[in-house]
Image (cartoon, rainbow, N blue to C red):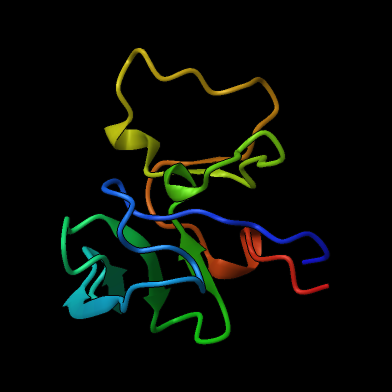
Length: 108
């Protein structure tokens, strides 16, 4: 990433690479795959998930970023649980549940 991205949890205590010490817990996803969830120890806001099936990739929670103007979702996952008021742009990749990792991970 060429530009510095800053963000933090909902309460503002945990800032990316600035202050705070994240905490984590491990769980099994609905698919049975393990994942680690990294969160703020004060307010509990999740910052990212690390997936067992994608060990070199993590899922950053974009809502924790201060500036999301640059952010474009790669795909819409778990749309089976999508609320009716959440729009999905025409032409965006959509998956009812978990897609195969190769379908959404950019390896370039």
